[in-house]
Image (cartoon, rainbow, N blue to C red; front, top):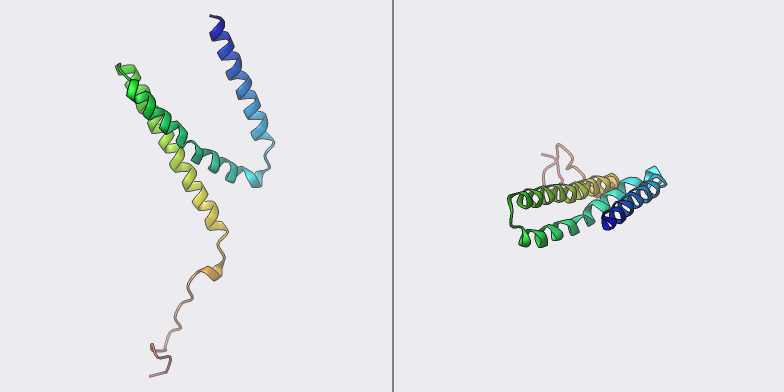
Length: 110
């Protein structure tokens, strides 16, 4: 029983510290920080693989499936947010210029 109380206390303290740290992040840095954190969430998928090797009951299979599903969604979401964020910083010079109408490939008029 004391181990359970210690575990719950550590969880609550980690939760409060996490909320305090994330609350202090400026709005301009929130998206890059969260997309990076979601990408790092791939460690959860490695953990799921390790736990799946030891799963031996229907309840553990359900938990492994849910952990794999949620972890994968978080990783993919992190990469999607990062991709969208990087698209915002591309300049218009990076895009190809359109070919002017009315001119042939040689550049002369017909």
